[in-house]
Length: 384
Image (cartoon, rainbow, N blue to C red; front, side, top):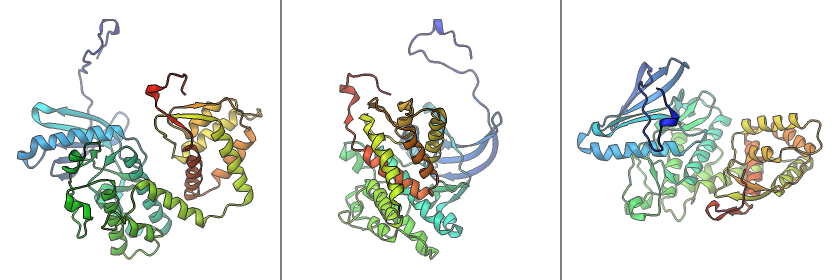
């Protein structure tokens, strides 16, 4: 396709003359609203999953197509390491069909994985699941199809929540949310709010907990260390149940913290860095978004230390802040000693993944106290 920019008008449709071709590999599975296949992009030699909208019940074709479009919108609105990624989509409303091209997860579902996984991996998977649903909760998204087949574990041990075909973006319209109770996973035990045709975050908590508990009991897994927390997730009465995934995430951090003993020197290294870091922040724009990928954080810190190896103070404070903060922010032009960053880096890289998570939770707990401003009413510039 050739585009002559000088002759184009704003809003003009850009059409590509030839769609991209893929190589068929194999069929994956079929469901009530369509089927999926595995295909290869031969140019970059990468596998993708293609989901085609083709419902078995043609009388619900229009209704299901609306959900298919909603699935695309939801998947495009999320970007998290523990949630399947969407790469492209094609919609043909006149023919009531469409396609979603998404990430291929090479691994196994959570039930199969738990049968052979060791203690550390099982507990790590649970923590990752809570992190993933905390992310969805923060973005007002309900999955509504909690079952083993929709929680995959890849070859690296990372979990991926898949299939948002019944997903829903929550809003302030209670009737809209009330009328959308859809559950594909049969359960012998249901939360009390289901009888009132209500499905919210607490309902999601119940079904996540119930799924994990069933697998643990089915395979007599003894090494799971969050039993008390799990019991609070599956209380039938919502008044007795955990109220949010974020609260569960914090409880995990507290439980792990109790099992970890930091020395006086380690605490001082963390506190010196955390104080200097938070003192450099003035305001957070709109919503706090933080970096959770420890590999990304470590690499950026390494680059900062390399580029400031001959300096006494960090020369680019913005780069240091953006290592941890993904949202926009205002900052003070304070000075942070290179040595404080170096000590924190050396301390951080020596820890296990669980302990790194504790350290980040503590740091982000401090950052959460930084004032948040609404960018719509803010006229001061610049933001990072």
